[in-house]
Length: 512
Ligand SMILES: Cc1cc2nc3c(=O)[nH]c(=O)nc-3n(C[C@H](O)[C@H](O)[C@H](O)COP(=O)(O)OP(=O)(O)OC[C@H]3O[C@@H](n4cnc5c(N)ncnc54)[C@H](O)[C@@H]3O)c2cc1C
Image 1 (tube, rainbow, N blue to C red):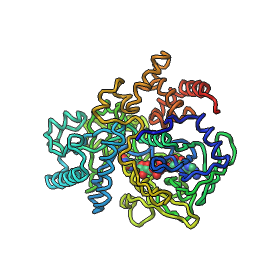
Image 2: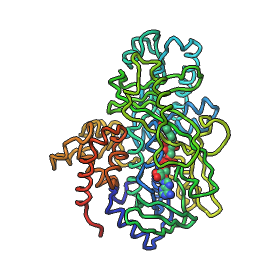
Image 3: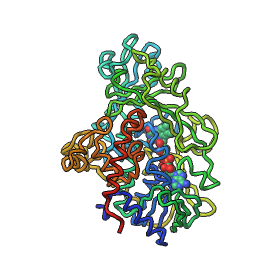
């Protein structure tokens, strides 16, 4: 099943498609929100043959979907809370994403639970039992152990070989397990939106919905500074933590999660993640997550958030200090504020319930408001596909079943095929089978081979504008690439990226 339309998204296509819809064309389904949930819904619906428009107030992955831990979870933590169905769903969706829909954007991440003196033998046995249960979920989901090997105990020297920065004193070994990790969460969203565009979905960023009803929306076009009315047979609100501002009856209880960004080499963190128990607590952990570019994200907090939902949440200083302190408890050198290259925070769109926010269920729900608008909330990045399938089923616009379980995203291929793609592995991990086309830009124009930050080249900036719907420098710095996670890197790259974006926008073919 190949996509009949182009998967390239850019300013020219946006302008032409928005004009057609503002001119009165009625689509089957209008999706509000360009996070992982909305982009997943647009793809599910478009692949079933529905005409679809997705409207996003700012940019693809502007909201929570770029602030995650970038893990494709196997559901272990839900199992620990007795939520067996949720745990199984998570493991199944992890397997689908890693083996079929997005192998290019995901990899197996080794995770080490270090066994220092404060972990008793009983405590270690308890954790190992949990890891084995997680592996049973993997088997039940039919994800091969060649992709995600089962857990095993490693010796002290082996633990140190995996994570040289670990404190050697008191280290008697570790528990090694594997879970899924994304190259980047925002890139998953962009791949979803582009795949949906390949099935004809209109992806319209910079379009803020002000009013939503069951048969359309009023929206403000931030590019042309005008109000547009878009009509549809069905409307789905996938505005994440902002969903309640569009549909009064939706009650959310946002929870704030923070991460700190540090340099892996400075702390002796290689390619293995660390799961660090929070001292004095039984089932609470901090995770130290190495990225392919040498940065390490240390997360994760989970605190109730009250008040107005900000556009871009900020990691509180207390969260940063807490995360550094817990990470330090297992490392040989202290981690201080001087090590912090950046930090980020996101708000989980959790359904209102009772109890601590860390205990609120990550189940998703599809709710129909009296005016006919469907809202999809809760859930998590890993289960976006199932959320999307449930939302399109609930919209009741087609009898065709969902096809996304076996639908590779733009750039996807089997791992064997990806290993033969003729491009640097870093590019393959971001662009999959399209990596040679990105690399080729630099052979046509050698200026584009220059880097703008770290290993990111000018060619990637041009690609983002031509094919990935980047409309300005911020889209490139903060969402198509993640240069912006280290503010000093973004500051240094901004002028060059802005000039490249302006030049590329000028060179796009005019709308016809
Ligand atoms: C700190 C943290 C770590 C996490 N880690 C993981 C993880 O490792 N793995 C995992 O599976 N899950 C994780 N999650 C959960 C996951 O990130 C979220 O469940 C998911 O990203 C929510 O996506 P969404 O599309 O529903 O919301 P969002 O990504 O917030 O998308 C909503 C979109 O709607 C747009 N919007 C809002 N109002 C309007 C309007 N009026 N008009 C048009 N558009 C509008 C916003 O701009 C936004 O882009 C984490 C969450 C947090 C907070």
